[in-house]
Structure formats: structure tokens, C-alpha cells
Length: 133
Image 1 (cartoon, rainbow, N blue to C red):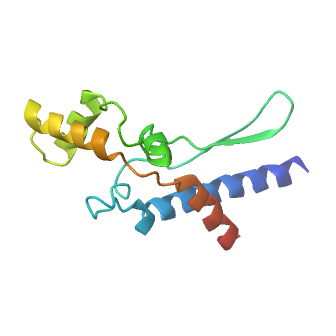
Image 2: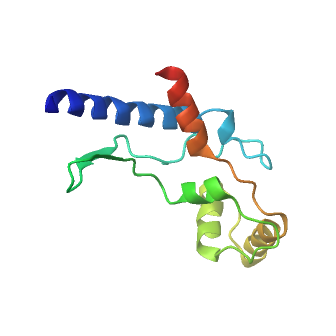
């Protein structure tokens, strides 16, 4: 019985990871401001998820994702304070955007002023899993 349970858990965690990768590669990953899929080539999730049992013997599946996913999931409200400098500079470097103070300030101000709409990635992942199981 334990082997059957382990196989089910393994298949479920693999299915979740496949669905997660499919969703971030789909149109859902498209940022409305840039018109590009900002998630597709990012390292959002490791290639495998963690499976283990807690002290009560309950199965636990843990998908380890990039911290950035929390910002995508929740978005950022209009009028919020300026985002921190370091992630903006890192993003600029990744996208070959100048990292001078003026450019970084303008990006931070735009994010504060306009906000960032939430993209509920995990809701789409569960829906994808439901459709494909």
C-alpha cells in the first residue's frame, strides 16, 4: 500500500510541475505592459519538486519556486511605495536596460504610480491539472 501511495504522490507532484511549466510558458505569462512573456525563460521552478511525509505520516508535496512568483501572484497596488532598488537593477541588467540612477528611478516611479496587475498563476496551474488528469 505504501508503494501505491508513493507512486500517486510522485505522479501528482510531477503533474503539478508539468502544469506549472506549461502555464508560465503560455499566454498567461505575458506582461501586458511589455507584451512579452516575462516568465517563460525565467528560472521560476526547479526541475523537480520535493516529496516527504510530515510527523503525522501525511504526504506533503513542496514545489520550490523563485521568490518572484509571490509578486506575480499578488501584483502591486497603484500608489504603493516605490519598490526596492536592487531587484529593479537586477531586472534592468537582465533585460539590457541602463542601470543609471535616473532610469532606475523612472521604472520604480512607474511601478509605484501604475501598480502591477496580479496574475494568479497557481489558480491556472490547478485548472490545467484538472483538465489534464
